[in-house]
Image (cartoon, rainbow, N blue to C red; front, side, top):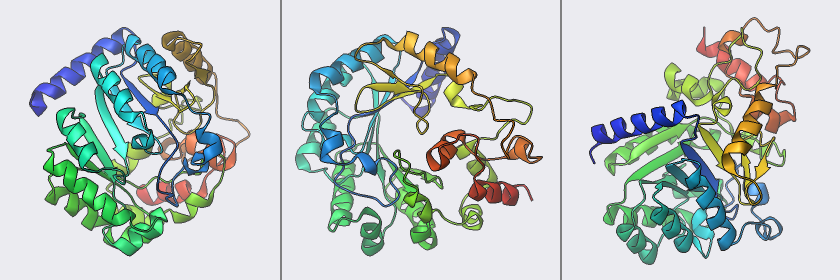
Length: 342
């Protein structure tokens, strides 16, 4: 299927599900386990043995996948942590493939070897996404905090290329890689891979704000990203709308599932949620969606009366992780918004 045919198919499928009020996409965190401990990673707080022991087993994952399939979802993304860390990953992936999902994989590339590459050559995903935050070994491993991770990442990409697996290179702009960031995009182009850059860095899911220290300065963001890219990444708050989550979370077109089987509509602000081991997806989505619609911007907040709110880039999910309050002002985003609209 060529790109034009796929775009038409994708659009028609999405439109059909929208009319039927059905979801299209699920992002499933299979595990929080990862061989890397990237300084900016928002899930690394759960990359430990205690948290990992609580994760779904193989049978439970398949049970949840079946429910996802029955809800009408076609596009499935396996992420983490690193989904390849699971010993039963190939079994889970094969099961999802057999169900008929269009599968995307998010990985560090650290665990890709000849066996893995050979498996994906025979059972290719729709696309394989690998994060490359530096092309300099020292800088890369300063970010991942794991020696030898750079060589393994590069080797993994080479094996996937040799197996003709569609690749997307992702990169997060931060203080440590600002000077070389454009080179990562050139690298992606050289290997005929899609390039997906972002400037967004979040606090960790447990409220640890240390990743925010690595954010590039707002001025640096605008030297790398154009206005459309900046807005697309975050969205714009509608001043005339009192809805707190005036974003994709309200549409329920995409939903998220964590390694414990909890479903939620905001990747960052993960409440309300419903566990899928005991509940079906569509009733859960409608229940969560109705609750989210009731969330309003606090009239007592700085942001409510701000005259610049109609072009503000602040995301309530990011605010929730960073401050514990979805209505809280975030000075970094205030500065970025002001610079963007000068």
